[in-house]
Image (cartoon, rainbow, N blue to C red):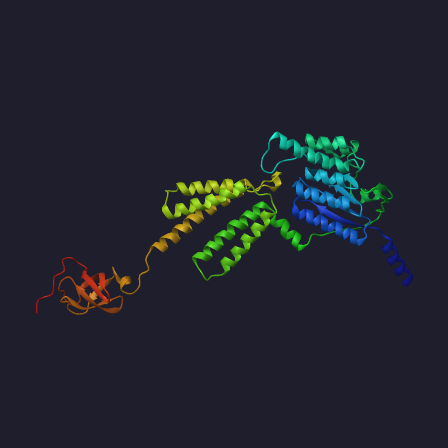
Length: 427
């Protein structure tokens, strides 16, 4: 038994290890951080390679550049595999695919459509040409060193050309077409590759033990927050809770929870490209709603505020791909609900503050009273279960029904409740 256990441990020790990172999201700061951590772990583990299974529509240029730089600087060979079937490496994903030591695709996948899309609209021709030339030079700088087809890569950038797995292989944009991950690792075993720094290494991947680099709780939370729809819901919900705290001081929970939600929303939006004109629209929307609530505009100011709020939310995130934009239905629903609720709450608060607080004798004005003794015209009356001294405009008998119409310090002024009520007999 002992020799068998030792043999098993020795075989396990000799078994190559391949770390695996699944990139199935948009390219943005969160995914860039996840890839950096996966590369650091692969380098620390002494893994034979890092396998990146990718399915992405693309994303932000700055995040893509950071990810490409990390792949090019990795001491461990990097294999990017676009799979499973139906996956794609679109836009920024194409840049990442071409940066790998080994670029592979599964049948039924696609890659390309890497034309630069501006976050804040199309600039003038000169600026457009500068940006396109910069992106082309960046792509060419490592595609040629990977011995891949720079002209075909350029076509994906300039004319948004997309390639199937077979077309990419024929055009020498990728190295392997493989149906499955295990088949890919078996195919690459023993292959000698030239690293980006010019050094040569041989891959040992046959029968490798694949270790999945799982996202941390922080990664999952940030990945959830970076969704612009979630960020807007947190922002609006937090704003309403903070407003509730201001109107009912001392409740604490709405204020604390609202503040947390707003801070999370600001943090999430900070990770995304934001249009400042949209921020101005949001500010204008709040101002218009406040004016509607305070002065009343027969709904015109409120409608204008809701329109500003809707356009502000729709254009808030300057996303280069549809997957990173705010959902129009969600933006319209949030704007309408937030606008109506805000106007109603502010109107209620304004009306409440316009009412003067009435205490003591002020609170009794308009109340009914009963004469406890003849008023000639001064006497005592019973009001709300309390005995007050009162003065009437005329003599009234005991038991007369009265109405409080005012007061002089602590003496109430009363009048008959019924105008035809007879006066008291003279004594």
